[in-house]
Length: 361
Image (cartoon, rainbow, N blue to C red; front, side, top):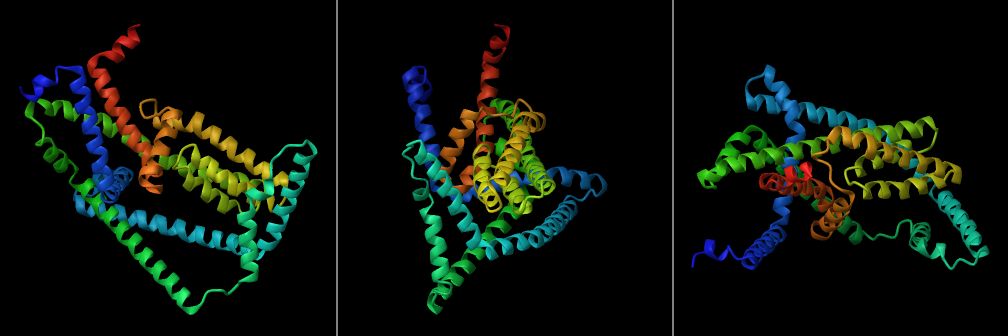
């Protein structure tokens, strides 16, 4: 019997699908480093494409338009980087200079909280949760220059090698993104030849759905990160809270990771707020939560649209799975990958008529 004849049996079909999924995940795991770079380059291409198409209206040469797009992006990023470096350097120097005082203030707040919990006989040891922080502070104070020459050389070597690795990866990402932008139609037509002629129209429709969702997610999430960081910085500056730029940059960068990004921003922001007073810390938390509410219920639905939105449970599941499989890169790529999966599922549900039946019922 041929494979098509075996597939009429439901159990055989389920087994074949499960086998393909396992093989697909195995390939992902084996080539995850290369695939992550290519996927990041694709997301970067989605971000650059609007600027590229705008320049292409005036400059018909695609290569020159791409070069101009890259020049504008690098000038923009360089300008923002210079401003942030000057702002962050002052704040980081201030943190380093006042670090012992900040540790002492945080200790006092934790002691007060511990006494409050003890007064109600609540069996929670607050200080033990922060022992690592206090031990690192004591180590820094007692071992200011503890690195030997050989250890310093190892640190510098590691830093140099890591810098080279990151630089090469960034170059590869931008180079592959350039090919995505310039030769996208040729790449798409080449991939279509891998499928039988009678299936190509369906593949075109599916790729159109995926393209629409990815555009909404990638560009929408990038815009949300910028707005989140700017609003957080502006609100903290208005409230005259120290380290507004540092907290704003953290909020903007970590917004690329939904849900967990807000949680990851809140803890360092609260600790920085505690260096001034618990009232300031409370103000910081209120600002972050208000902006998160605005992002979740106003910005995200307006920017991304209903088609690109993903249920919070799926977001958490995707983030946890992405981190376990691919680390930090998995956290960043989890939502776009989930959006692609949702587009595929919705496409075939719509093709099968389930969505229309649901609307009619």
